[in-house]
Image (cartoon, rainbow, N blue to C red; front, side, top):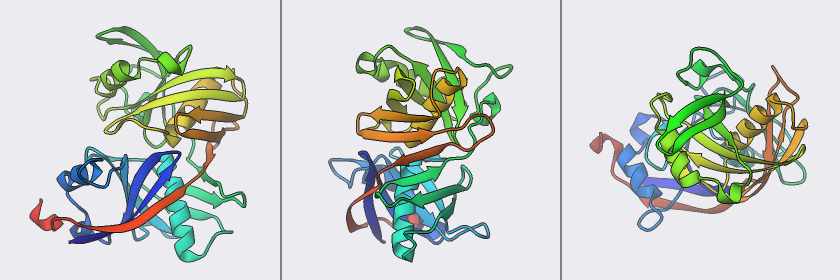
Length: 283
C-alpha cells in the first residue's frame, strides 16, 4: 500500500499527517513504529490520521498515534498542524474550524500573523478524567518513585498530564522521573509528565516527557496542563508565555469552567509517500 503523507511540526514536535477513510487504510502499530524510526523510517513524534467527520457540523475527525504505535486522545501541537492543513485544503483561512477527536471537539482559528489558535476544552482536574488512582481530587498529590517521593498536580486536557514544579528546567530530572511516572501503576493509561519552571506570572519554562514518545521539543497539551495546574494555585496570569526547547507557545485560560486556548506556529516541512504493508496483512 502506498501511503501519501504531509510532514509537519509545531516547534519541532513533529508529525506525519495522512488520510484514512476506514480501518483498511490504517497502518498497523508495527508499521507506525517502523515509520517513526529516525534512522530507517520517516521519523516523527506522532502520526495524525484524518478521517471523515463523525459529528454533524465538524470539519474532520482525527486520531493520534505515538511513535511507539499506541493511540492517544489529544495533541495540541498536532491539532494546530491539522487545522492549518485542513484550512489550506478547503481554502478556509479566515474561518474557524471545528475538529473532532477522541479527546473531544477542538475549535481552531488561523490568525493573520500566521499563528494557529486552538481551544483545547475545559481542563478537568478530577482524577477519574486522566485516569489517576486517587481517593479524591486534590490540588497536589504525592507519589513514590525509585528515586524518592515526587509532588505534582494532575489534569486532563483531553489527555492525562502530571505537572511537577522545578527550580530550573535545565537540570530537571526528565530522563529519570519522566519514564518512572509515565508508567506508574497509579496511571492506568500512562501519563505525560511536565517539568515546570515559573519565571514570572506571565512567563514559564517547560520540558515534557510524553508517554509513548519520550521528551519532545514541544508539547501543546503539556503547555496547557502546566498553566492550568499553576494558575489553579494562583501565581500565573490569564495569558502566559510558555518557553519549550523547540520555541514559544502562548496559553490563555480565564479560569475554572472556561476553555483553555493554545496559540503557536504550525509548519509544513514536506510532502511525500512511502510504501507500507497492506494493513490487512499486518493484523
